[in-house]
Image (cartoon, rainbow, N blue to C red):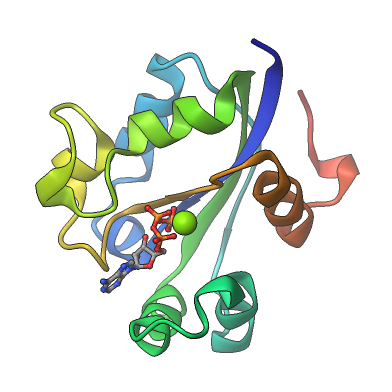
Length: 140
Ligand code: ATP
Ligand code: MG
């Protein structure tokens, strides 16, 4: 499998509870390398643009307000099959459905406040990485 890069966000519920290090340890233990990282506080406009694909869904307003409610940590993770591997480490969207040992099983509060975001395809990863980082900031 090829080396890939994927975009991760440690979401407001997790930064607020001081879980950044525990979550990064899960990525590293799975063989993913953090090649870019920053802590930012998104505006509602930025969160809305990032999640524009969900504009028509009933939870969009709630999602945007939540993502702008507290700081987030945005990171680029690199590794073999990084996009799928990160999704595995994250677990299912709803923590009640997530496998044991996954980030969402261990840390998520609910389907909405589910601690992490991860790109879901190569096209999403490319768009999402470029949304937050310049090429100069990716240090593999
Ligand atoms: P993400 O895109 O954040 O990695 P995901 O791909 O597992 O998560 P999506 O279906 O893309 O899930 O939904 C994006 C985010 O919107 C979810 O992670 C969650 O925070 C929120 N969300 C999804 N479904 C619901 C819902 N039914 N009610 C409230 N919030 C939801
Ligand atoms: Mg998604």
